[in-house]
Length: 276
Image 1 (cartoon, rainbow, N blue to C red):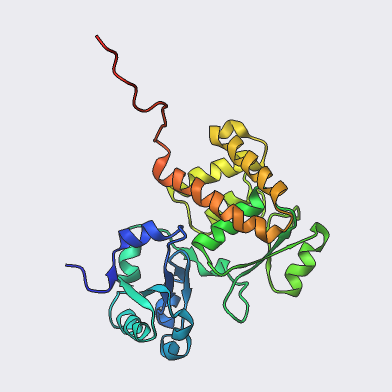
Image 2: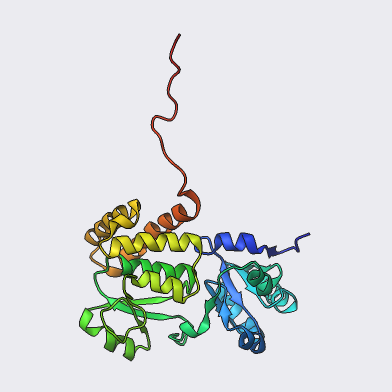
């Protein structure tokens, strides 16, 4: 029987990657993190002992508290958060059950570029089209919902990333880790390096690669993704406004990849019966 105020691994996995995903609060001990320095996608580390200080920042939101086994650490923090106006649950079986179910985990070593507020900082070229919208979508939905993206002129990306301790991405520079590799686009690289190689994200990666590298032959939907991306780039002059609009676009493509790729649409759906 499920514990009260808890959520199953399967249900949480369905929420991650969607706009409905709750705040994921990881309160594991330093020892647990040393033994496995990986995070459930979109989760963030919080100090268990300072919940009274930071708990109020989540007031009015929904949260799932994570610890190693789903016992006293997460149960106590969730109870405390509920006193602060947070709709807080715990993950049944904790992170141990998540791993046992072979769900994806994000390596912490790939996410060193955090500011004083704990947000990851990313820097790329202005006037984005495909990869530079797809990658921020992936990061916001599966890595860091509060990630900051700085769009700057191409010649300034490296210096801005260095000055603001950010990660440069999708730029033609041999020293940039997050960029194209051979036939792979930056989105492909992020999916692989961040441990997010689920079937839906790999299917989406094929569409992004086809749209971003001039390979519409990779998937029939790639041409449509490119057309929609170019259309958005003409509608929005502001890069951040375009990113906000692009989030919905990639939400839709992701849900198609995850839930609807086998569905077809025929019209008309109800033909009148022929009279005999």
